[in-house]
Length: 327
Length: 283
Image (cartoon, rainbow over all chains, first blue to last red; front, top):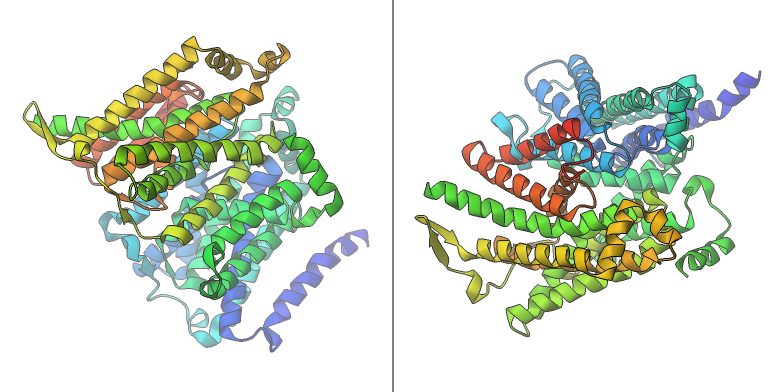
């Protein structure tokens, strides 16, 4: 019974999201497309939080694994390989590359780890932009022209893309819930809070960190597969370090290390970014830049809402605490 | 032969830029444990301040204005944004990430996203003939500036009281604090030095690339990070050696291999250094 009660909230939420397209407010293709994008980034942010919020690893290279998912799928499908096979290969690529690069990057910890992951991801960004062998299409990107199954093409089928994105979020959240409640998940929390102590207890923090890094890379690649189907192509932007920084912002705004915080942050950030871009031209000065507004909000959130949306603290304590630290 | 000389000097010029950005980053990181993502913003600020000031005065004075703006911005950032989060490393990184996002967007809103042509001083144009290679003078300007900054930094670290505090703080910050010295003043100072060096790099990058755009800082910053890690964090000579290695490797491989291969080789070098000496070359 208790187990059932615990599942009630996620199942209820899922039911709401599954039935959203049946409401008239949401069933226009444009809205569904935006919602699908929000869901993909919700899943990505949640997957990134496995590193940042759960394991305490600040990776600046998450875009690489997402881009692998996007580009491997797009490239393989252009070669005539069916979607299902291309998707599996893309996710495997994400897992293998994450395992290999993680094994090197995790030799250093703390901030150095962040810089190394950033450098590795930069290679991905360079490769994508330089268009080796005409594979990635360079700055122009790749369009998914053929091989997409019928039920995912056409304006009328946008709803299927939405459900696909929803399925992705559900998978990510389910995997995370499973990992976090497992003994390994508790070790990850231990690594985050005090890696040396985990070592003293006879466990190897390195292998646990590598597992989390690999799993997170695989989830990101999976997100890439869904993303390429929703957007209908790949562009250099998905490999950029800005994308990783945006994921970081999403997680911090939502609440790192919480159950739904990162996903909410991801969806909300994507939605706001999109909406702000829409109204940007009518706003004066720096407000016309969505990233200016979101960056400022992010900075304020770090000072005043350290736990993100999931832990909004009483406002009245916030300013005195800041000034106490300044003086 | 002349190609090799040209590539070597150009590579050293690039290394000079990397060093100017990386030296400040490395000191800030070594002393205060702050990975400063906004360092690229100081660079862009310096470049744009120089660009604006150059309309009203000589380019030399404009560069001085740019450097002052960079140093001032760095001090403000340290006092207002970094200081309240002292010892909370991750949050400091997050704040500088937000700042770099908002700052670049602000620059874009004010100056536009397109590259602007950068004024070119008389003394940096023209070519010089060395061993049969015709080399643009701006490379030598970059190298000279980096050598000057390197000398000044080493002298500061070695012979001044604050330099001593900075060196001691990089080794063991708690001990310095325990001896009754306020390390925070040294933080602010190091930020100012780093900001000034980055702004100088910005102005010189403007001369070198002939344009300035809001994205200049970010793209140089990533290689500066690589230089810092390879050189060993907190070590100025380490940054200098690593900058030279990275600049030369990048230039030669990009010329003899396909374009872009040099950038990838640099990252491979980083991976190798990490596998062999995880603490960097200097440690």
